[in-house]
Image (cartoon, rainbow, N blue to C red; front, side, top):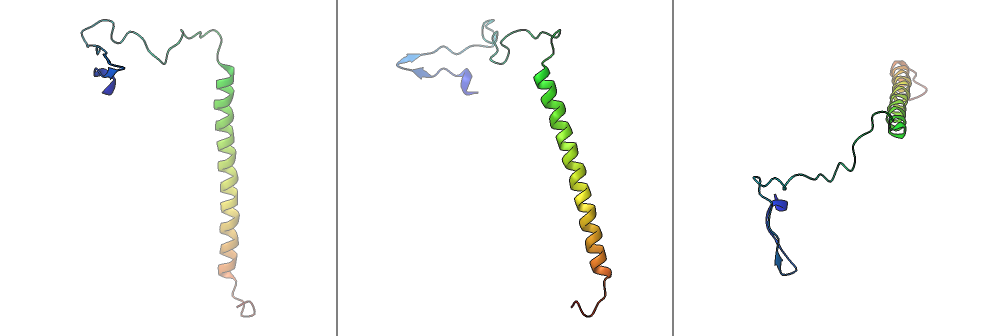
Length: 85
């Protein structure tokens, strides 16, 4: 809670905001303006869906690669050739 303490800055003491003071928590650094829900953020929507699609494609590709590797190792285990050893 370092932001609520009064700390000396350049020789001055800055008054810390109190919880009972109505001015203490009226501004937010994260909200610069009201959201307009009539115009969606299409860049954000596209990034969200694109990322999701890319992750699913990677998941399916990885699964297929794992199945191919599993089948290859399974065939090697069943191969009982004395010439290969």
